[in-house]
Image (cartoon, rainbow, N blue to C red; front, top):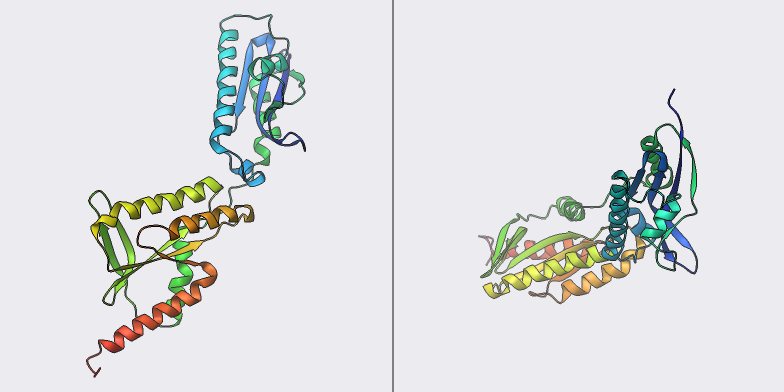
Length: 288
């Protein structure tokens, strides 16, 4: 019969506001002294946390939890080698060695424990109970193509006779391929951009990357280009401020693109229809 052994554990919490005490569980540390076992696991993604606390500093958070995890693993390795066996009475004493109790955003819960026949399985159960069970499935985030779909459908519904071609903007160090472009003396290019992303920094980074791309090809002297961005907003209303910042970043980019939000798609399609039909009439063989 397998003998049971005592174990203790503590949960690592991310406390977003020490005044209100709001927190999300982000890791678990378990200690089974009889087998010199120390187990630790922390979140490697921040999707759920960013959903609860949109202004979370992604890099600072991940750096902190990974540093805590490395410290615990170092202690675990020492225990496996038989070092300092009497130094740690329970999981809390190991936790305090890794992170001191203060007002920082990462804090340990009060220690808990029990008896187990299999400390590894118990650790997995504790981690699921306190951390991973609350992970909702990642929400569907709209792609660039999904932002374009209502434009395409409305053009089809109105029977606008436009045929899109590729337009390549080439600079000395970079090039951009626009897949939806047509020409009536000047090139009109349309680029859908979904900003339905997980966090504010990702939204602004996408706008900055596009601005950088446009700057990199601007020396190609493509003065005959009219660029239009169709931008999709994030589903998380807490990120709408970052979305507005992204629009401002794009509006000041090279080529001074026109920017249409999804609510403005009917106006964009009407503009395309007018320009296409005027071009068709002007270039008709029956035009005077």
